[in-house]
Amino acid sequence: MAVKTAKRTEQVPQVYWRDLGGRILLTNDFGSHALMTEAEFRRYIKTGAAPSPALKEKLGPAGFLRERLDMEALVAGWRKRNAFLFAGPGLHILVMTLRCNQGCLYCQSGAVKSSGPGTDMSWETARRCVDFAFASPAPAITIEFQGGEPLLNWGVLKKTVDYARALEKKKGKPLNLALISNFTLMDDKKAEFLLSRECSICTSLDGPADLHDRNRPLTGASSHAAAVKWLKYFKRRSDNQGPGYRIFKPGALLTVSKGSLGRGREIVDEYVRLGLEDIFLRPLAPIGYAKRAWDKIGYSPEEFSRFYSGTLDYIISLNARGTRIKEKTASMFLEKILAGRDPGFMDARCPCGAAVGQVAYDPRGQVYTCDEGRMMGWEGDDMFRIGDVRGLDYGKLAAAPASRACCASSNLEQQPMCSRCAYRPWCGVCPVYNYEAQHSLWGHMPSNGRCAVFMGIFDAIFRALAAPKKAKILAGWTGK
Ligand code: SF4
Ligand code: SF4
Image (cartoon, rainbow, N blue to C red; front, top):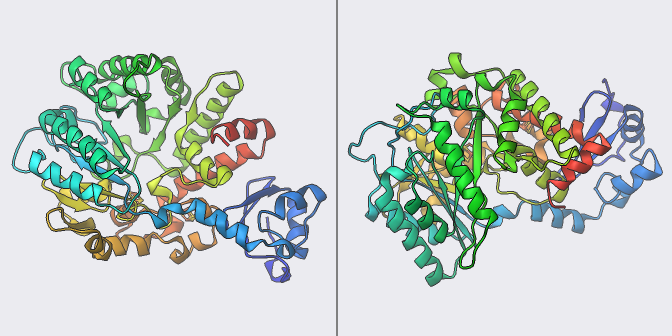
């Protein structure tokens, strides 16, 4: 649609817009949005006035009408949505080992098969990482155990969990514990220990057995069977909470590979069959192993967008028929769009979560801006390294070149295309992706695959929000 912006009057405050094919999306810096027809949009942009009484009710408080701008309320809403800017790193990712017993086709963790110097985190290093995490200015912290496969370093993991819980009591700082595991080494004793320490547990599940096992091969066994067995176990335990401690619902992460395309319904059905209420349709990023195997497992942003939008529609239709299941990317964006709250989605913040929202610790105690930055370090490029946990403090962390470079390059106001994009209030760019895929921290959004993927996701969400029945279901995903 062509709009002669030269004729726009001074009556219209700063707004962004996007043609969704039949409906126009209007947004602003306060994170408000409105959907209108093309004719309504033309009238609005020409006069700055609401094109109808119903729209006036919506546009006024949302900051779209100059004569009704309530700056105090709008700024308070902006501050709530961006509360993370005033906190400090809340997410601390401890890579307990680089070793893994699986050989996933798209593995981004830089996993190795056998032990060697620096592949397992020592207890001394883990303790220092936990001490550093608790020194964060963030009012609450999450410690996430990752790998490789973290259960391969069970002795240190166990000790670290108990140490972190003891420190939580001593310091009075709320702590969430989370474990990401492929479950192949899980057993009753480990499960009981983790549950009794209120550790939330998440695994990978790419869909039905054939797809999952192809993506995540395990010598001599099915990785899908292990994932399913323990997902059922943790689900049963969380459904039957006993006294003493809180048991979280288990979570699963899906990585969309070439093999997933065209199989959205089957994948969602597998999640429903297992009683999971969230599915996270995560696109593959051309980083690490995935970059080298891209021809075999990768796809174009357009292919992903088609997959995403079709699968989201299917999930919405299941909800309409009474099945509870949410798509995680959509629900996190909806939390921002509809509820004005920060869901803690590090990759969709401005600036992104690198160093200011999260840090990752490798087994040697080297601190990186995030786990993706840590993977770059493992590949031999320390661009995203902040320092050594021994001798680091939060002043040094904030002043580190890696932290400052990530903040500057992920500031959407400095990104030429993002600064004028209708999705800017809720989006985020990734300096690691840009560096790896486009050889600069700033990247180039018009040809950036991640930008195209995010744009496709936002388009799918707003098209659904433009349809009243679907919008009602999506509003239910935010708890608003
Ligand atoms: S990354 Fe792309 S979708 Fe996101 S704000 Fe920038 S231009 Fe818009
Ligand atoms: S650099 Fe990328 S992966 Fe790291 S926190 Fe920022 S958006 Fe996330």
